[in-house]
Length: 266
Image (cartoon, rainbow, N blue to C red; front, side):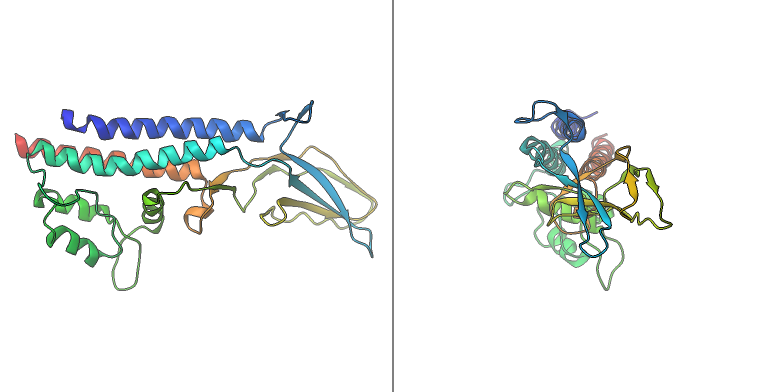
């Protein structure tokens, strides 16, 4: 094991700790607890019933009354930045290990837009030693596109977010997971229980639609997830899952390039 790689490994460990704290935080947020100014334990949402004016059918919804804590944003962004930094740190550690740290230029992991862009950055600028070019090519650090194979839209977008100087916000995922729908007693033959979805504009979840002669119980269970407040594909994925995959990729890159260094200096 090369000491030069202690720093990127530490960054990845810090990122995983931040992800663990992020998971704990959002799970606690969705649990029943005391939330000022309410003095009794409650959830961050309430059930509301809208009536259709013509039929008096009941539309049952869950509406959120509390915003996601800013502490969750801080932990998610902390993990994101540490993972992103670890790629640069692994590359610098590799150059240090083989005594080829460039005297000029910005030595950073080359997140690119296309394979041609990557080839240009590797070959023309001559900052990254040739010994590591093939390892970086195998990472395919660019989005998918026409005219070539490979790439990864999700990883490229999350790396781009990490380069942004601004904190990335969070949102409740559009597709709300209802682990158990409410039980319904009805004297009529029809009940509408759609695939639950999160309405970001109204800040609510549509649970069901029933006739006036129906009773909807409170025994539903939710399993909500939090995502980064950006476009797809990253905005459609649970943030903790996404960060875990990004950390796994950073760990793999650090291990592969360290192994390459070990062979080179033997």
